[in-house]
Length: 252
Image (tube, helix red, strand yellow):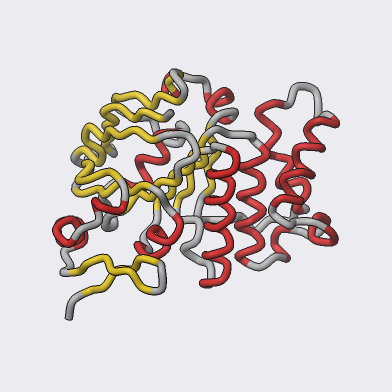
């Protein structure tokens, strides 16, 4: 269970970016944070894992406040995947092994290696790719590596900040399918900041609509009605079902 309670944040010299943001979600759910640019979506995610320090509020994860924990303890519970994947000359294996750093004392153990190898197999990062440098991989492959590094942390919640923004449609679907399958199979919660509503509709269970730094609506598919799409995105649109999947239809 994740309970976000009245998170507030402001950048120096600017009005409040986040104002009393509150919501709850259960383990195993995949949540999409939606809204126009500048409403505080990425800021909210960065407050969760101390990239930014919230002005006030709590993020309760199984009864523990992430915002009150030392950063090392947060890293054992929450893993962050950014849209910006570093182009570095480290091998795939070594990059994923960095996910075990929060648990490391004197060095990596056999248990750490076992966890990393299990994650790589799960994401099909096996064979020759393990020894390749990150800067030799395609964008989709690099994003899968960063997801694998996050999973190697054995988190209870994945925080995904526009991880598919630079990927082609095949890799977008592949990465989000992996995340959804992991959520449903392992009971891990995932929160994704995403601009593509159609991708969110395809893969996510819950939807948080943000407007002017506040929660406009939160819930299941039913919150994405025409009124909400108009209020949040200023477009006349509706959600329709096509071929067993939901999509946004914008009026002419």
